[in-house]
Length: 124
Image (cartoon, rainbow, N blue to C red):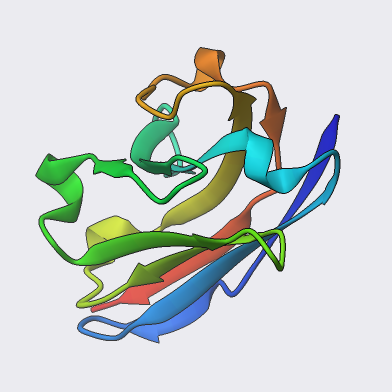
């Protein structure tokens, strides 16, 4: 089992940047595929990006379009999401998630462990 804690969210103006972090504890971090999801008020949780143990990654290109970058540091048991050129429509609670096995999975039900989320609010 693994425990996940997100941090780094906040209030930022449109065009600004944030670096979200997800700290993991418990079983060996490197054995898990990791992902970021987000959920805006009144909307379903949606996939943002995922990363495998060796750094391979996938993105929801429609919403991200080169503005976000996912990474991980297995030595620190931490995953990151660098978010640039933020837009008001990026406002949401951002969640990190973990699953055993491969990382090419984009639906919430495929992930076993979740953090509590970190709020990102982008003002226009």
